[in-house]
Image (cartoon, rainbow, N blue to C red):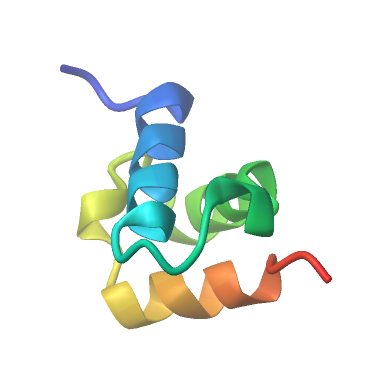
Length: 63
């Protein structure tokens, strides 16, 4: 399957909800997708360092 904004969004949602401590509603998912894509220059977010991903996600935590 080719990587796209849709697959990247699904990846972000799965990562955020994986441990059951947060939901997609706690974060600006589209912001995470845009920022990660801009930095990684790919829609395949599996290639992004996990620490970097979580640093990006943390900046999009809703108040």
